[in-house]
Image (cartoon, rainbow, N blue to C red; front, side, top):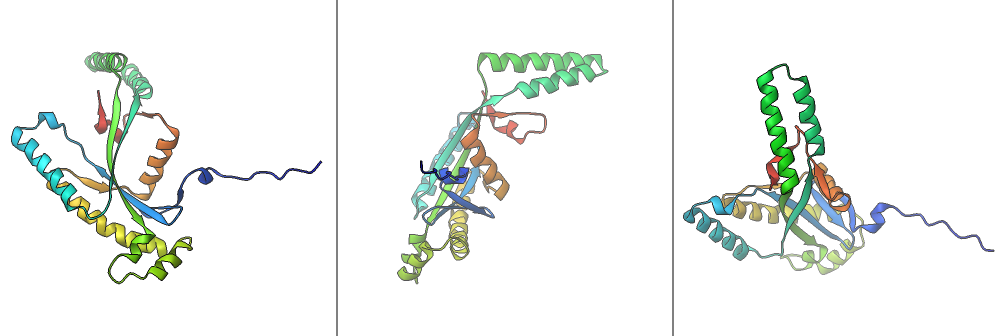
Length: 218
């Protein structure tokens, strides 16, 4: 009987991501993107004038676009188990009786909140794409050079994508800031964390040092 060859594969074989260079994601097929995290605001707590300003700002953003974008909302359940255990430890170690009482009341409040409604972590991102085909349609672009880029595996393409995406990103950032919001590009480490959580985790864990607390809503 013929001996079967072993199948060698990695997790990367099941995703389109080739590499992450600085804050640029490189995909198979010579595509790339960068991602902006957008701050959020409770629209219904704004005055009528502020609501109108946000709406007109969004209209201005859409009308200013000469390229495609993707608005992505990531919503996940929040696992408060670790947070509650840390609260229990704080309560037990506290020497101040009044502090213990306040912490116990707060712990009960969080526990009831999780049981009755549950918590969600919501984050808003704008994904800005780039394709090697854009090199053939920009002024001075060379179709033959663009086709040659398609067959490369990094280097020149990564730099070309980064230059184009930085220009696009600045346009989006300026328009988002006109809406009174903040637009922050995700760093190399944050991009890795984002894709890992999207592919592996259905929930997030919150502790005392978690920066995700600001995004948690009922």
